[in-house]
Length: 215
Image 1 (cartoon, helix red, strand yellow):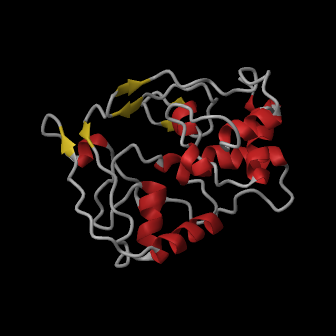
Image 2: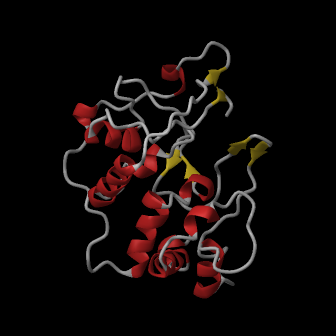
């Protein structure tokens, strides 16, 4: 990352965190101490995750057997602090209405858009950015983000708008995203997506090929 090195935390040792603290960490990037958690976590996207999905994630995290694993502290450059890198929202000013996600009678396109933007977070690599460099959760999927890896910066992620995928069939997209056929693709998290149901993958494909995903 341009501000230093950040290491993913150990998620098996959250037993002392409350459900609300875990949710605030996922949705808003806030540590129970009030300190900001650092990118590359896509907090902006997870802020729109349905309450039911958030509850399921918290239940899963609580089911994990604790594993002792010392994670290195973040190494920030130029004497930066966490507060210099990002600020956290005032929880008292956040909406309190339930986040329901797609309705039971949602179309495949509507479900697919929710999965792309708020669950599978395809927008983290393939989405667009606001003027301040933050993730534009509702923006077009034109791959403006720069991905930072151990082997350098990657800014060549493909655009995945309707126009860019016009030659792809639903079957092509399901097989590609869900790792149903073929080999691995550079930086694509197929190790995770391969466990998605065909129905969810088909919904994602439906959204990607729909007018709602046009530039």
